[in-house]
Length: 580
Image (tube, rainbow, N blue to C red; front, side, top):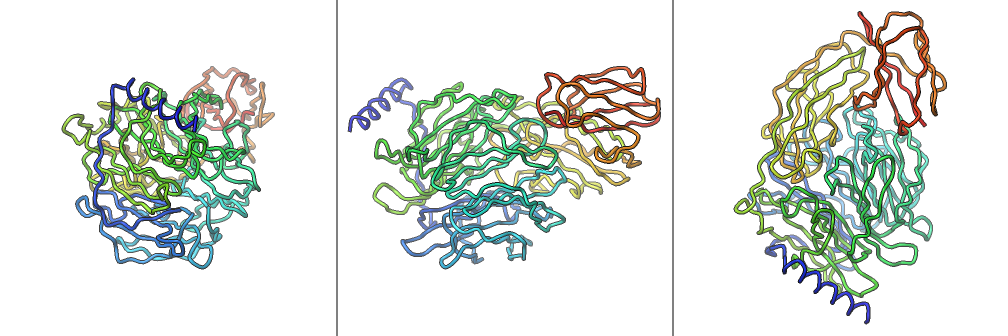
């Protein structure tokens, strides 16, 4: 009781300090079934420029259901398409076949048995496709992400018995045999937390009877577990976002700890694999969800959370407002729920973040509510589309190319926090190499997310066949508004003379991997300049070549993959080096 009174007093003091600030939402009357143990996926599956929705969960004590809702001018209308019933799982949109529309993965508990299925979208109609993906059952989590940078979406699935990373090989998912533990009551997400240009993997859940939070670093397509000492959680959620607008990804973690006490922890990314728990003065939650989004259109990310506070015997669903890195309750007036999800969704396309909540209240009554954001409906705080990137450049070398562009600008999102969406095709206007997952006619995103190259200003493509390629890029702000794509550019690959680090005969480096000093040896003296770059094209060192043997010092470099570029009058050569 004492804790409850302290909580009430603290809330009143915060409210008074904030000058009575509340975020103004209206609870709309919507015909969406109430659900618990639920999951929500939003995305523009029919390519008409607005966000549709899939929701799955328990509709009563015995039955699960999965529904597809089409957004028709701001009203969610249930589709007649039928899907297997799932609960305690995940629904994930992603364009796995790179055809420009959103496909759907479903995983979770069916009414009779575990289920995991992939559905291909053909002109807005979903049909199940045969795959090698294991059926995982309840309390599982899944995420699409292009971890090998080949332009298609790979897949991670985390579940009780086993966790899998599947490589997308021309639309077929192949188990990579990556060794990772199975986690129950799981959450997972792809993220480039170390800004090295490839996607790493984070997962959390119950390992045996204890919570566990794991991070796997992507090192040239192989995954190595890191010890980053994040809060171990289960029955919760993880979400990455750049809340302090410094150009790297920060982390929110919610869920049960090892003492079955709810936790809500926000970590600031300080670079070099260093994270700081900022000690946010917010309630610890379990049976919970968390999502970053700019609720008040001020250019920084706020945090939407939902779950149970076991210490104080209350439920909470709210937006934690970010005010220069300090988080406090915005008192939006949502119905408080647990065992479900709360998600940002701009259902009415008016430029602000509305909120969809599904779960159960403190009495066990099932809830699904849609809340319209009234504060920023383009009357008080218009969020204009960001500017296009400028200064586009392509630098081919053998079968690789380095694409680069200048940072864009926006009215509210800081330059450092803007992300970019890249399109590359082997035909003019095409997306055969990299698909941007946006509406082909309007450029609006098919699902609310960062651009596909995140916040990078350079992007390297490998293993390209000789020929001419076409590319363009757009800017994405923190409200997931997009600029128009830039005028199309092109580059030409004329040869495939790039050294394979495993079989190079004309260039060798030892030791590789390297800690500290390395020696580079090449057969012919036909190069005049040496550069060391990271995989995003940032140049760390330039020197004039004086002999066939060069000694390189990697002391002080962060762990990761680097590229040594040898530049000559008639050819360039690249050599990958792994720094430990």
